Image (cartoon, rainbow over all chains, first blue to last red):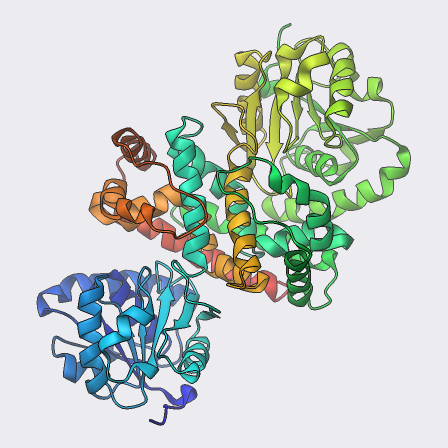
Amino acid sequence: MARPNVLEVKRVASIGGGPIGAGWAAHFLARGYDVTGYLHAMGEESIYRRILDTAWVSLTALGLAPGASLARLTLTDDLDRAVADAEFVQESAPERLELKQKLYERLGTIVPSGVIIASSTSGLMMSDIQVLCPTPERTVIGHPFNPPYLLPLVEIVGGNKTSPDAVMWARDFYAHAGKAPLVMKKEIPGFVATRLQEALWREALHMVANGEATPEDIDVALMNGPAPRLTIQGQCMAFHVACGEGGMATNLDQFGPALKLPWTRLVAPELTKELRDRMVDGCNEMAQGRHFEDMAAERDRAIVGVLKAVRAARSGG
Amino acid sequence: MARPNVLEVKRVASIGGGPIGAGWAAHFLARGYDVTGYLHAMGEESIYRRILDTAWVSLTALGLAPGASLARLTLTDDLDRAVADAEFVQESAPERLELKQKLYERLGTIVPSGVIIASSTSGLMMSDIQVLCPTPERTVIGHPFNPPYLLPLVEIVGGNKTSPDAVMWARDFYAHAGKAPLVMKKEIPGFVATRLQEALWREALHMVANGEATPEDIDVALMNGPAPRLTIQGQCMAFHVACGEGGMATNLDQFGPALKLPWTRLVAPELTKELRDRMVDGCNEMAQGRHFEDMAAERDRAIVGVLKAVRAARSGG
């Protein structure tokens, strides 16, 4: 039952021949791991390698780990062989509960004891996936954001039968492997990022349905408004810094009443003292004592770079 | 009543001594305009100039227009003088309806005939602001995103009494002045971008209120997940490109049922045939016949640049 040392993991198995499975393989190869990719059928190999080649261009531009090589990939359609010497398993099989349940029933036996098995699922709960698994304590969600070889976020949460130490191991391993892990407090549908994205998406659909905006309007607004800033400050710190000395406290105390306005189809929660304090304390913790002008300057530097990067990408550079 | 030629505008008046008024002044100065800044009191000058100096660092890094100079700014607390020879007026006075109504009553007389007056308001409607204005046909909303000297978005919409040609003039002028104008179809609270941001913000507050996430979780999720991709593809094109050959049609036909899932507190609209077609047609128009692989490659190039820019900003570079 001993877990591998996160710092010493050498071989990762990536299960699934689609863009997510191939994307994970590309990421781990770029970080210098040996990767075994499991394909449902070897006929998937050519598309898989094409995804890898595409991803490699970007991963090379971002900087490869020493020794990283596409040659360190082994592909197989033999599941037992794929996981036999894996020290971590990333599962990206199709999003069907019954299929995943049967897969975890088998993985629970054939994956070496103690090795963590993480699912890329975006829509299923680990409590449901792990019901037939004989060793469910080492199964977790490790949900990436598309494209998984570029976007750093991995949302991690266990199911009812998952051991807390498996969640901590996954967090440490992903962080060591160059990802931005986010351990969730509760198993909620959509995790955090997809849930936020879904709120935005539904509001967008309402606007298009009502003739208030076109899809292009939605995209122009997002790309040229919130997006460049959100790359350096999430919505909480964006408001915290924009409110100067007063920070999030000023934001909530001053604009709290505006939460009653019908600005979106999403009804706001009651702004209780407790919620206010959680928001304010959370922002102060993130700021770690930094002055708002310092954080605003960092924001501006990032936005300048982001705008230049987007400009260069659009002109093919 | 003749409007100035958008290509020949030389002098802009920016009304308001706060961060938005100063931010607009910085933007127009950087684009090579003469700017007259109106301050409520000259005591606001030192903070105003500090905002300008800060903004100028970023604007210089992005590239100044030929002849652009901070020396081309004139500051005054005389409103008549501020607008006397302006060919465009950007108003960023405090967000109080009564105050703006009285201001527009006066601006409607003293601003040269035919010159467009645009309000930076984020929360008020032009139909309400323009009620006392003797020349309301040339008043529009021109809502920026903070910081206004960096983020390109300007949302434009008229009020009941606004002439359609004033809206078109504002769109053409902002585009010429280096902004990304978005003309709105209807006067709705929050316009497009703030409305989308507000849906996201309310969902975030719900999650914090329910103990599902901390403010830091929200920000980590946004910065490392959706944000880098949203700088190059809004949510519509992100889904369109992620679905490969099938595009938005595949996205809606396949994941449409998931709109019924309780992924957020925002209830989704009915996915009618009409809404589906608007989304699909809108994405196809944006794609302009480009292959999804080409757009995915552009996306990846942008994300690589964005991640590098954020990394550099964080390390003080």
